[in-house]
Structures are given as C-alpha cells and as structure tokens.
Image (cartoon, rainbow, N blue to C red; front, top):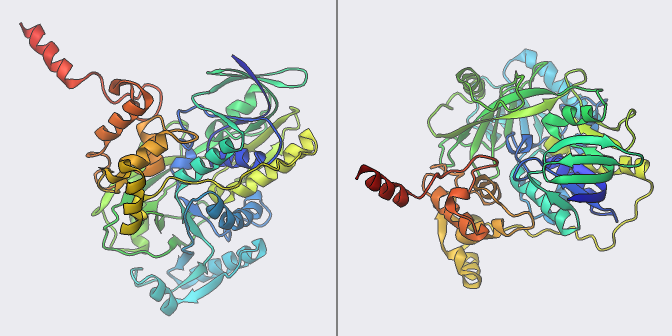
Length: 491
C-alpha cells in the first residue's frame, strides 16, 4: 500500500509528537511514523521528567533559547492537554565556598536567558525549603519556575490531540529507506511506502541513520546512557524540589527529584555507549548514582527502591547543542536532532521553530479554523475524591473494579487507554497511560489482569499479548493445556 502526504514526521517521541500537534493547527496532510508499537518508547520514556527553568544552557545555544520558551508554553499546554504539571521549583545546592562562583555564573546565565525570579538563597532559607539536605550545604540557586511532568502522559497527549486534529499516526512503521524523487521523498517503511513532499527527521538516537539515507552526513549521534533509581511513594525522606549539585564541565550531577506521582527519583549518571539499544543497568553505574545522591541527602539508600532503569540520550558531541534546520544538501528534509536535555522542556518551542522552517520550505501555511486545542485525558481515579469516584462509577461500572492495587488503577481506565485515539496495544503502553504495574509490586499482582483485558479488547488470544513490541509475548500457551499435554505425553 502506498500513501501520499505533504509532511511526514519520523519519530514518535515527545519532540516528534509536539511537532505533529503544532502542524495540526494548519491545513496540511501530516503523517507521523514510529518504528515501535507505541509512541514514547525511546528517550522520552526514560528520563528525569524535568521541565528545566533554563538557567544552565548557554545563552548562545539553541538549548538556551528554546528551554525558557518551552517552559513558558507548558503553562497553557497543561490546561489544553489535560496533563498535570507540578511547578515545584529547582535548587542547585552549594556545599563549599568555592561553589559560590558557579552559582553566580548560573544566576547570570539564567538571567540572560530570560529565566524569571532566579535568586541565590542562604543556608537558613535553604533548610526551610529542604530540611533533609546534608548539613554541610551552605547556599543554593533557587529557580521557582522549574517543573515536573509525566513524560508518558505528555507525549501521548501531544500525539492524541494531533490525531484528533487530523494527523495520521502509523506505529510499527520503521523507516527502511528514503529515496529522492523529482519533487518528493519516497519513504519505504515496514508498513508500506509513503510519498512525502517534506520529511521531518525527529528519530532521536537513529536520526543520523535516517539522514544518511538521503546523503546528509553532517552530524553523528553519540548515545549516552543514564541510570536511575526509583523509590516507593512511602519513603520516609521528604524532598520538595528538584535538587541539583553544583554542575561540572561534563554533567549536571546526580539529580534528586520527586516525580509527578510523589515517588522519588535519583539519577542519572552519564556513560557514552556504542550500542543504541544498550539499556542494561550496571553495578558500577548504579553505585555512582547512589553515591552522588548521598552527597546531597546522606539518608538515601537502597531501602524503599522499587525499580532501577536506564535511558539513552541522543547527543551531538561536536556541538553539545540541538540541531534544528533544513538540510542544505537535501531539499525538503528537515533535521530535528541531538535533542538531549533540556529536550523535554524545550519540546513545544522546538515545535514552533520547526513550523517556521516548514513555512520557509513549503510556503505560507493556512491556519485550520477547526483546530481544537483541547484534549481530554483519561480520568485519574487515584486522584479523585470519594464523591467524584462514586459519580464516575455510577456512569461506568468498570471504574468500580480496581485492577492495580498499588496505584488504584481501575478497569475503566485501562479500557479507555486501549480505546483511545492512539490505543494502547501492549502491556507497557497501558502502563504508560494509566500506571498499572508502576507501583510497589511492579505488576506482580495486576499484570495478568491487564493481559486479560488487552486480549478481550483487542480480540486476540492471551498468548498474543505483548509486553512492548516485536517478539515480546509474555505467555507461551495456556497453563491448563500444558498440564493436559504433559499428562498425555507421560502416558
């Protein structure tokens, strides 16, 4: 099957989906392709989930220019997309007098970037904000505009609102090759060919591979792995802000931050790797994360840890900056690459910038007067009052059946996730949307039930239900059939 479109976006991370949503404001045919079985399966799903204030990136870089604008845009987006953001603020904590020069440098840089309300606070005020800091902490840069967000909900919301406004999203559609034709690109995918007048390369770790397909070899992506510990919500140590140590030349250091669901997250370390699929945790890396976190809050340890994970960042070593531009070598090919931190915070501003590039490449765009900016998320049962829950159950009895005890996730939420504009088709896709399996037992209780619901809703056998994507089936065959077969074989 061959399709035609005016704009093809390659990559279903937070940047690709933000671009799709921004382009859906115009009268354009737009398709987004993603090689995995869901959006938000790469860098966007495994990060620190911070909306940085913007004091760290150099004022002369795209990071510096786009971070603050992106942070600002999220105040409207959280209302439009129904994605909660907690504007908890950030602290960069100094522990010795020699750190104070760096705080002053960050303060000046942040002010040049336009970050509002930055200030350096002294020890007394610092410990009023964060009583559990190590006693040798002496001061901090305070950035009240920093926030935390659920990157899964955010990416899905960008994508689903784009779909609601006419964008087509094709999953499990890995790009195999791109051929230049007279006035379009022929993009060969695992699901068929697409003729596109403009191609936007937002493929993250694999964006250099995509660019090489059209003869654009201006950059190389270096994967950088970062490892994390996630704590149970019932951890006795309270942390109220995102806390950074004073950064070094190569790293922001080990961050300690609450998550949007009141867990505690620490990490990441930084390690360059060769394999773009290397998500293995290492003892050395995790130990470095723990030691770094304990330098800021010494009471942290392994008690309360419920998960270890790692993520990969797509870095361009030569510049350490984003690269967002129309290719000079290949007409109709736009690179949006090297989007490492603060990529999550910058995503909506990146999308704005890409639209301007599309206008330059394609001509003036006509606004779609039917664009609907509002997206309704799935009801969050765990955050409702008793009265709200009762009303919801009265409307839909599936919301009265708890599937995940740790996170109070109902059958109704899971069904809504499967039936959404970009419906969940795997166990992890359900988890990203509504959190079954994200709590203390990490799916030990609820995962079999999620498999049952997926099988029923998708009209497939339980043995066909996948954890994430290709070849990730959880079950081999029904247990009863296996037992019966064993009895027959023994006879």
